[in-house]
Each structure stands twice: as structure tokens, then as C-alpha cells.
Length: 126
Image (cartoon, rainbow, N blue to C red):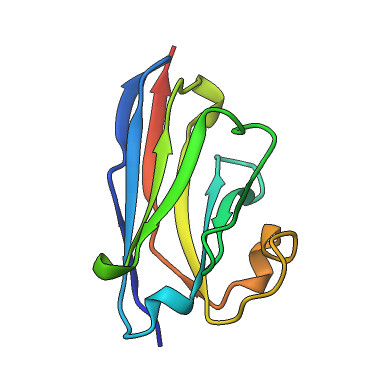
């Protein structure tokens, strides 16, 4: 079992920045594929970004160029740096993990992750 805890959400004005963190339990974090998803009220869960154990990453088109994803294996933590935030980025952001390592495109699908955090709210005011 992998336990994930997100932090860093909050209220920010449009154009601002936030950094989300997700810390995982387990001794083999470096081998996990990690992802971020978000869900706005009344909408389906949406892929944001993923980072492979190799460090390779992929982003949703809607956040490309504004968000970055990174990992610190020594701290068992994955980060989502969100810049130039827009009101449409408002959502609950979820961290996800999987012990396997398939293709980045495989991990755009939320159902391919085995473990999930509880979510952290991000609200961007206009």
C-alpha cells in the first residue's frame, strides 16, 4: 500500500503561482510513476501531468508551458509548480502513483494509477 499526502493548495489571483507537493510512503518511491490530476465541480477528472521514474514527463495541452513537474526521490515527494494560473485552473488537485512504468501516454488515463491522495483545493480568482 502506498499512502499519498498532498499539500500546497490555496487561493491565488490569476497570473499567480502555487507549488503543490505530494509525499508518498513506501521504500521504493524512486520506481513509482507519479501523476497529477484535477477535478472541477461538475466535471470529470482531468489529466494534468505525469513524471516517470526516469524523470521523463508529459503534460496536458492546457497546462503546457505553465506547469512543471519534478520529483525528489530522497524526500519521496513529487511537485507540481503552477505558474501563470488562470481561473479555469480552479479544481481539486489529486496526486496519483503507480508501481509500474508503462508509457507516458498510458498514464494520461486516471484509471491506470493504483494509489491516490485525498486532494488539495486550488482556487484561482479573476
